[in-house]
Amino acid sequence: AQSVTQLDSQVPVFEEAPVELRCNYSSSVSVYLFWYVQYPNQGLQLLLKYLSGSTLVKGINGFEAEFNKSQTSFHLRKPSVHISDTAEYFCAVSPMGTGYALNFGKGTSLLVTP
Amino acid sequence: DAMVIQNPRYQVTQFGKPVTLSCSQTLNHNVMYWYQQKSSQAPKLLFHYYDKDFNNEADTPDNFQSRRPNTSFCFLDIRSPGLGDAAMYLCATSRDFGTNNEQFFGPGTRLTVL
Image (cartoon, rainbow over all chains, first blue to last red):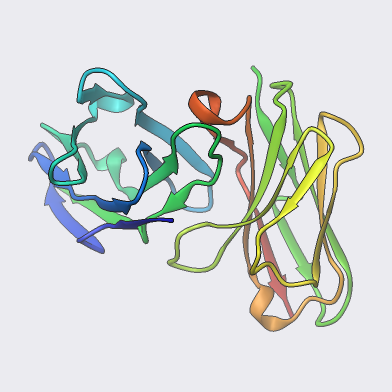
């Protein structure tokens, strides 16, 4: 089984400041890793994913994440946030191979203010 | 644009009155999923279809059923909604499992139970 811990439930940040949203996971098998964003009253949109290869993954809207196997982490970063980045962010893992289930963390609410 | 569509976006039902939520996809994906997301919580997988094969998560209540009459459509039936079933219901699709299990989400249906 897999589990995901998002260490911060809320992250307030000023516009144009950098931000890091933390994600740690636990799994007995190798996993794929994902970050999704959810705007109010909308579905989830994939920001980026790590399947294999380079541990630094670039996604949409200027976000990137780094997979650290030894620390079992997959933190999400953006060097300069915008007001429009205000949303809920979910980290998720899925077992490699024929696995399908996405195990989500509880989410981090990013609030960007002027 | 290929997408996942959910109807209606908002559904109000009465306690105990059956309700059906609809999902359709133009991605021609093999797998369709239904998630329940309660307020300020992570999405929780209820069940999925791989083509016509139905897979129920172990802790999904019997009150929840699903139908997939063809590749494009999938329905969620709640036989006797309780107040605790009020939530956002998310439909998702993926091409396959494993490295092709990136899930594409619809906008969700918010269910209110009176």
